[in-house]
Each structure stands twice: as C-alpha cells, then as structure tokens.
Length: 396
Image (tube, rainbow, N blue to C red; front, side, top):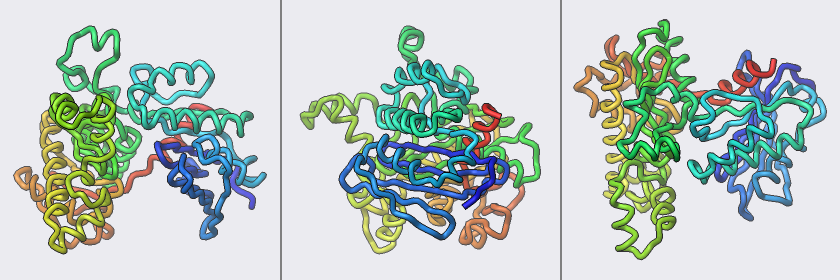
C-alpha cells in the first residue's frame, strides 16, 4: 500500500501499553494505528490496524523495546519509506525540557535524570525512543513532553511551600501533566467558539484513567491540578489524587508497609478502584451505581465532586470563566459524570442542556450547556496530532 510521503510516526510507549499511529500532520488522518496491551507480561497482545483491516503481531519479547521493535517491523516497506520523522510522547520533562526537542544521545542522557519524577512512565518512554531509533536510524526523532505546556505557570502556581533548597537543588515544584492534551483542547475550543485564544478563559478537564484540569488564559497554562508527579490532584482510575502528606507515614505504621509500599497503593490500588472495591472503569461503576451498589455510587460521586472542586479552585488563576471543556475517555463519553460536575458548578451560571449532553454535543458544536457564557463543551482531544505537528515543525 502506497501512502502519502508526508507522514509522521507517533509513538506513545506507556507504563503498560504501547500505541503507534502513522499520522498526516496536515489533516490528522491515520493510515496505520497499533495498540499493545499488558506490555511486559505473558498476556501481551499486539494489534496493527490499517483502515478496517486488523493484524495480530507476534513478539517473542513482551518488553516495551520488544513490542515497539515488533510493531515497526510489521510496517510495510512503503509505509516505512513514507515516514519523514518520528514523534514520541514523554510524560515528564522535569525542569530541563520546557518545549519539544529533537532526540539525540545528550538529550536521552538528561532524560534519564527525570526517571525519579515519573518512575512508572519515563522508563517506558525511554525504551520506546531507543527501540524506534534502532529500527529507524535514518530519520529524526522528536520528544514531546506532557509537562512542557505547563512551564508557563507563574511561580505562585508552580511552587510548593517547602524549603528553597528543595527547589534549587532537587527540582521540587509543580510540573503538571497531560499538557499535550490541554494544549490541543485550548486551540480546538477557541476554534469551535469562533474566538481568538486571546483573553479566552477556560478550564480543560482531561478525564480518563489519569485525570487533570488546567486553567488556560491566552493559550497559556496558568495552573493545573497535577504536581511534581502524576499522583497529585483529582481522583483517578487507580490513583488517589490529593491526600494529606502525613497519610503516607500513618499508613506505613498502621499497615506495616514501607514508603514504596504505600506509594504503590496510592498509585495502583486507590482512586475509583479503591473507593468502589469493584473497578477503575467508570462505565462499569455508573452501571453498578444505577443497579444499587453503594460503593460504586460513592466512587462516582467523589470523582465528580473532586473534579468540580478542582475546576472551582482553578478559577482563582483566571478571574472568571468563559468555557469549561470535558475531554478524555470519561469526559468525552460519560453523560452522567458531566451532568454531576455541572450540577456542582451551577453557581457559576453553568446549566446543563440535557438533550445536548445526552448526545455528547454532537449536533451543537460540542456545547452541552444553555446560555452563552460561561459555556460547557465536549471536545475530543488529539494528542497524536499535536505530537505529529511539533515533530514536523522541528524536522522540516
């Protein structure tokens, strides 16, 4: 199959999954997509898709490096020739990477210093970059950082009230995450509203298994709910979000756990899963809540209350609100979550349009509220397109 010669391969090597897409940066069209689940385990599944055609890809090595190598080997000669560059999603750039950069050996050496800030994600990101460079050494690779968009946060939003030496010597500050998504949503929302981003005050809610909200003014991040790591902020699928820092010591003493053990529970056994005792999947929880499960009802309600509380807190950074944007797997698809969040925020003048919300804003240009300002919207995110366009900008 021949493909357009102006194509970017986007690689998203996550903590337990790998996603690939061949993206046209001008249109956003995907000619090839791929997904590997349960990476690193015996149950690893790898699937490549071209349009409606689906192909299982075998790999003897279920590691991130092995899976990326297998997927790239599965691309046809024509597909590989059509690639102009490769763009990589990197979850955390630390204080060193505040914009997208071309990958080289020096950059990778610096990135290894970031591992401690996102130990579940950056090693996987590095493995994906290294495997792709080995497979495609003849074209340039670009790293696009989830934290970069939030580098514009002012010091009052960026700093923790901890000793100055922690900031100076150990880079302790708030970095945020999901910046590539929030950045896309800012531009796309302005486009849908027919407005310039100048002066536009919005809060974007990226709600999925990982969740964060961002306060955006003039297309710049002014504050966000995630912090030093992706654990801070809203309730998530398996992550607790905000807790009292003293909880770590208390839980360690009461449960006989060490520091790593407590952090493992807060990252992997908390959030929706911990509250419900059933699942981290919002679809299953809303169904269970409707069926009478008290624990599922509590999990959904806490999730929505904390999301609304996060939005309200971010308005301090904006001085008002023009648009509230729902996105991510939950934000784009859960009618009930959006309805509950809007109910908590009714005091801002946000009133749900039940019919529009019920169809996810499909016939209203994304709008799911009545009135003109503020407006609530559903806007599907497209991080892969942002990565592809950054990659072209740096390599063209």
